[in-house]
Each structure stands twice: as C-alpha cells, then as structure tokens.
Length: 251
Image (cartoon, rainbow, N blue to C red):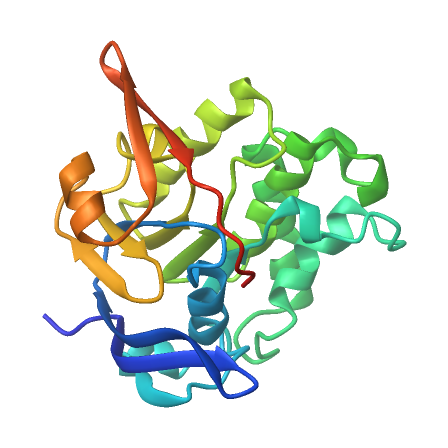
C-alpha cells in the first residue's frame, strides 16, 4: 500500500540550525499517529514542514498522487493559544475560510454554505454561528476550528495540542469524534498527554531532535528512555498520566 505521506531523511531547522535530523515516517490511510515529545523537541517544526510552511534543509516529503492534486489535502487544527481573538470575524466566516483553497470548479458557494451549516450542527455550535471568535470559550473555539479543518473533507487531519484550553467534557467529546473520523481519515495528533491519547491513537512517534516510531499505542518508560524522549509516565490505577521534564529550547 502506498502511503498518503512519505517523509524521507528529512532535516529541518531555522537559520541553518537543525532542529530535527534525518526524520523518516510514513502515514497511511486510517492511520492515527500520536506525536509526543518535549517542548523544543521539534513537533511543531515537523508539522510546519508537512503543512508546507517550512522548507526542508535536506530530505523530502512525498504526497500520494491523489491528494497531491488537491490544493489543500490536509486539514489543520491549530493551538487555540495561537489564535488572534481580536480579529473581527464570525464563527461562520472562520469555518467557511476552510474552503479558500478549493477550486470553484469543484464546489459551489451554495455547497460550501451547506457544508458549513451541517458541520456547525454536527459540532453543536450552530447557535453561535454569528458570534465573533473573541467571544468564544476555549472549547467552542476548538469546535469552530475543527469544523474549519474538516470543511474541505481532507484525507489527512493534523491536530496540534487540541486538548489545550478545553474543558474535560469537550475533551472527551473531541477524542470520540476523532475516533469516528479515523474510520475515514488519517489523523496526526500532537499531544503532551500520552495517558489520554493512548486510548485513541494506533501508533506513537516520539520527537526530540530525532523521530522514533513506535508501532502501537502502548509505550513503557524504558522505551521512552531509549527513544531519548524525556517524558515520565506515572500510573494512577489503570490510567497513565504524563509529566514533561523542563526543556529550555524553543520550537
């Protein structure tokens, strides 16, 4: 089976200073990859490269032909803390902006509006469609940007720390929604919380200057140590909880 995305010998960095070295990873249909690692380890840098926002220093990223033909083959849910709440835009307009890269030949304005309305209803936020994003809670904001990421019906969905600034109720809803979406889409989920995501992801990639791929969702402290991934697993009953060591670098 040909991968949707193939990352081969990829080195990434800024101002000629490498952050990630010789990364290799393949994303196949219906994969659900949890990306973990310390702050400054390169998780966000890797996402930027996959999203086309950062050119490789060496190596390459290859998209499968059927998604390479699309202008926007990847859906992206950013961290809420990186959103400008003062920008004058409504919930409906934010979601609709997810179609900005789609060709008018592929979808009409009426079809886009219908898709936006359907997603807002599906996420339970149709009643705030005309609110400005600055008025929203963290959970509402995540719902809005998940709608935006799904508008173009991408084959790959990337989420960057989606459980930041959300309440516990929506966090559970979000992961259950991702579980359903994974029946149709590949998902790449960046998170610090191994304990939470391990119930949902299928495989784990540890990123800390290098990338170590773990072929299932059960990972031990010894394995994390061998991957040079400075995360401590502390188990309370049957549910592991994660604590990250302090890290001075910045992505």
